[in-house]
Length: 507
Image (cartoon, rainbow, N blue to C red; front, side, top):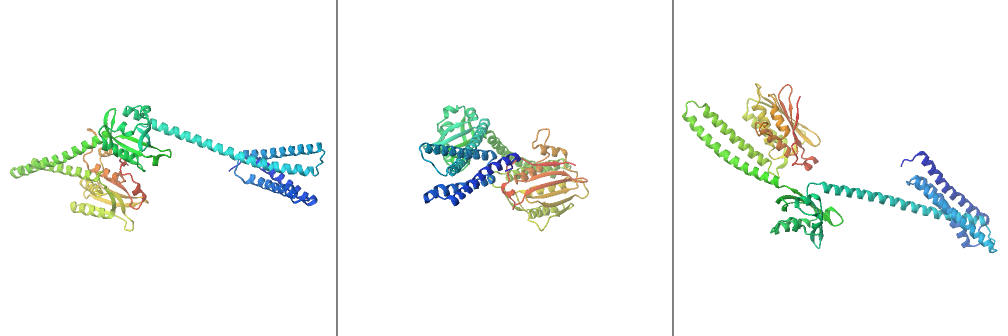
């Protein structure tokens, strides 16, 4: 603890006063014992040894005051109490001596009696001052702790009051989860008054009638000993809605026997997902069937017509529709949240297989790889990560206007991530594609030309990675794909539900 020079000097002076008095009185007691010691053992103990011990204790106390971590102000307070104790005991000794003289009793060694009184008074005053100082310090600490608790409580109350999701504080009364308090959002969503629902069973307030199974499941979660998430349908002022509940039971939340429920309305999200699932299924089914009819009839026309250009265009377009449906199916499988889609992947093996397929399909392309052989290349990725590399390599070759399409694949590593860079010598990624992917959404006027780049972005982000599109020098594109290493903590803590982190860097 750093002290100001003035405060330090005052501290040393106060400590010297206590220690010095202890040394002086100790020396006096020793001299008294040597020159004129008491005749009895009791007098020796009470008049010499006990005061001498107190003097030595005071001398040590002076040293302790210098070395202790108490404040200079507290040192002054202790010394003041010591001085006051010495003065009070000296006055008491004088009054006793005067009283004895008035009674005709002449006391010998009056000076030593007063010194003994001063020693005892100073020791008692020091002890009392130290005790009072510690009590005061403890009181100040408790006051600060109380203020912090009040501040934390006020922040907690402000958080609950301003939280847009309904929150219920509950406790178990005779084993029944009972409402203790709710926030304003609960009043608004469930059209209830916090004062009227206080003390009412939770299921009676929020669970729809005739939903005994839902009430039982909710009651089970509220008695759990760990935090849970629970999907349930609840009755609100707007009708029955779907909610995602976060249940923080009393065993986890507090020590006062209360728990909390945070309810998030997910009705719109669930409806949106259901609609997309139906539209996706119908689209893929009907798209493939109708495209098959078109392809079959186009083949018949090609066989019968002398001019087959238009018929071939119809067939090629229908084949592209089939490929589009297959891509949608690949995306659906890769991002299926009902199954665990991430796993440990050997990056060199995946890239070798992707390069082999690309060389077989595009023999005219020059595909080069630079993969270190002395490093651990296991990554944590979506089990469809090979689709990412297939699409990037395919795009780099198919949209390449160079005489010899050249694709270079390199791998570099950091402590937590492995980066795959796929560079080409083509025309580069169009600004239209960059803008759409950068904004993360499409409109009727601004949209991507296909699903390939979306597939790349979504699978990489689902893997807990990052994808960046840069301009190559002098021309072409570089696609950088970062994936968490399987032996790093990044792979364990990666949030596979995060929003897209696609980056763009333009020269």
